Length: 276
Ligand SMILES: Cc1ncc(C[n+]2csc(CCOP(=O)(O)OP(=O)(O)O)c2C)c(N)n1
Ligand code: SF4
Ligand SMILES: [Mg+2]
Image (cartoon, rainbow, N blue to C red; front, side):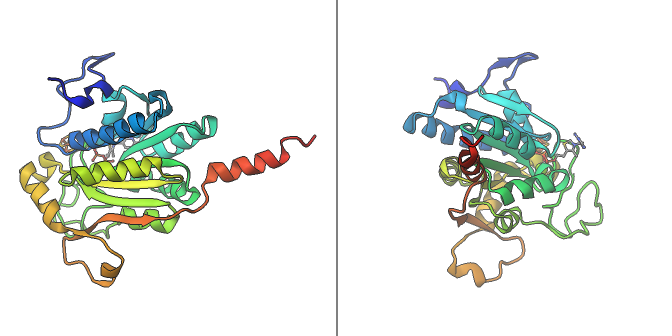
């Protein structure tokens, strides 16, 4: 029996067979790909959104490889960090698109940090999915802006000396309507958050913590168990409590209905439509 999500994937492409994937054994990116396809499948089937209305846009990184390499949807493989800007252009040309940006922590927070902040500030109607493995996977395990302080990496053999970005907090402060964080060890929660986020008007930011067993040199199952124990379920009441070292919030961190940029822009255009 074929995997139910295979109908959304390309089995071969310009450079030959796409399967097995290029991801290392046990990498969390394949799981996240499965979750996003399950969410899209629900929207295609329940809301009758045509498949052609989905457009996936990525930058560069292991995480970015899910788009043009495997997805049987329109996809743009753009420049490192620039996917939010490319998605903005796509939406200006075709506002009916369901634009889904797939990004990594380096892509979104380092080279593309400003692009990410600006789409959140504009609250554009797109979904930004960040597959956060806390390092640069594709280029050899360098520290990224989400690597914890003190943790060694190939660029920080004595431990990372930099402070760490919380991408969800950044998205909330910048103005995104919907923000959620889960991990590969929370499959149903990831699918539900993605489904909600894709439907939601405005910018949805969904962060999935994914294991990179190759560079963290840990067993994937152990890493997923840690995700389960370190991820603390978010609630407004608990917010005041300080998280212990290594812990992070999981859950829906923001769900609000601020005005979305494209709609606001369209209203202004409509006001002047019939004026000479
Ligand atoms: C302009 C530019 N600078 C640097 C690179 C090299 N580069 C490719 S991927 C990458 C980091 C990717 O890290 P992340 O976004 O976390 O993705 P991951 O591989 O971890 O999924 C870098 C620095 C590039 N491709 N283009
Ligand atoms: S290097 Fe890490 S992130 Fe990249 S495919 Fe391998 S396990 Fe996944
Ligand atoms: Mg990364």
